[in-house]
Length: 282
Ligand SMILES: NC(=O)c1ccc[n+]([C@@H]2O[C@H](COP(=O)([O-])OP(=O)(O)OC[C@H]3O[C@@H](n4cnc5c(N)ncnc54)[C@H](OP(=O)(O)O)[C@@H]3O)[C@@H](O)[C@H]2O)c1
Image 1: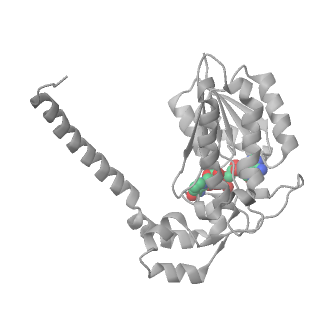
Image 2 (image 1 turned 180 degrees about the horizontal axis):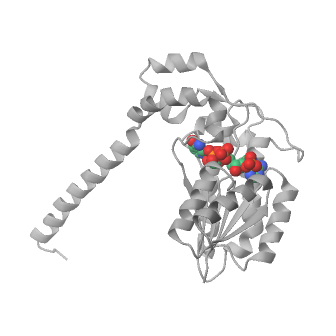
Image 3 (image 1 turned 90 degrees about the horizontal axis):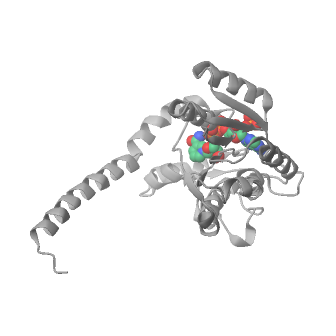
């Protein structure tokens, strides 16, 4: 049976690249691009069908920043599909990002420099506002609209014979320091994006606790630093061209993960040798 896959924010950047990848790996799937801007969604669909002629690609209007739109879209999904196998919650905003230049130069010459480049902690602020539902826009878009979508689609995600996967696009900029339970929407701070992404990580944990038994499994991913409309909203492209080599040198995670992998393989060899050499005492 064809898998049903729904991707929010599928009309550009990481969402569109994800759809390309999904169709390359499984041309049989039923892919639904859930987008706010339908003009861009049509263009994304055409691009996908050019590289994957014959693919099954649907469009769904969804503004995750609007409660009514989420409820309408979820209703539409329920009438179109019998279940949802993979739900990629990827749409996100970072409005009016500002770089704290003073903090940047201070961090550049401090022992904190790698952490600063890896997470942008203390470096990046945004200007948020209330939306027409009376919610903070970043919280509403990045987190709450998606939460509501999961809640509405529970009948299609839970309790079916097969398990379903909910995958959130989080970020290394998800910072505990930006999040407070007393100010869930981050109405009084200047880092709503970091707060919303940290809340995303927490929510994913909670969803697992509440829904694993019904076959819903949630996870978060960080795509790394990707040149998209969002990153070009932070700095113009020529700045990124200058910064990328520095970031590349500072990307310790790849190196560390390889070192960890090598270390684990070595340890595995030692442990395997040990258990074959030692008599089983049980
Ligand atoms: N780029 C990076 O380096 C990076 C790093 C870590 C995490 N991320 C995360 O990756 C995700 C995708 O971002 P991106 O980098 O690919 O940026 P992008 O190209 O700006 O894509 C953002 C997507 O979200 C959609 N979107 C925004 N507000 C929406 C709303 N209210 N309802 C429905 N869709 C909405 C946009 O659609 P419209 O056409 O309607 O605007 C667009 O398709 C985001 O969650 C972001 O936080 C990105």
